[in-house]
Image (cartoon, rainbow, N blue to C red):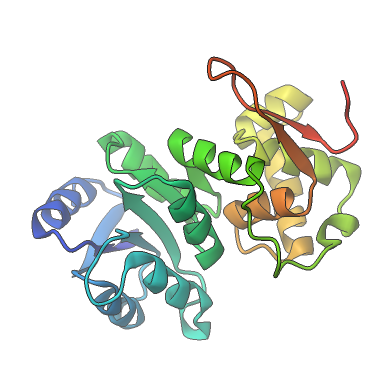
Length: 237
């Protein structure tokens, strides 16, 4: 059973999320918080698998609460899924840097939200299309914060791990990467998890950020009608 903590200052939204989540056989809401400080306290008390976190809350905002939860030694293993109406490059970058495992807009479908919860529990990153676009645009503009990231983190990766990490940074799922490279999703998952272990990434989201920060991939700005193309460094095809 997936245990979920809801953190949102709007009681009506919390009630809506609780009804949706509790209708599933594989998940349940264990507590509700109306601000960031409550979210941290309740995370310690209830040890949820996932915190569904809003950004704009009183007392302590969701990004600050996310950073404290993800960095606390006694809260290791708790995933944070950001759910917000503000999918800006600043918020996405700060959320991932704080340790969030996912970032969804509040216009997500009920099915998309439930699938998102299951995705982050499985240890994979989850970024909405708008959040992915915002994150890539931030790095394209040169505003990605790389000052505190040690260089050479990816040197230990094999060629296959680097290739799959690059595709993951492009937003491809394990299934899509497997189809492109003619391997099973399980094989992709194994390589991705080995890459995460080697660079010290807590989850797929952090691995994607590291891939951009370390220059493993570069995004080319194409017309809006064309998807962003991400290539391995040195690939000029």
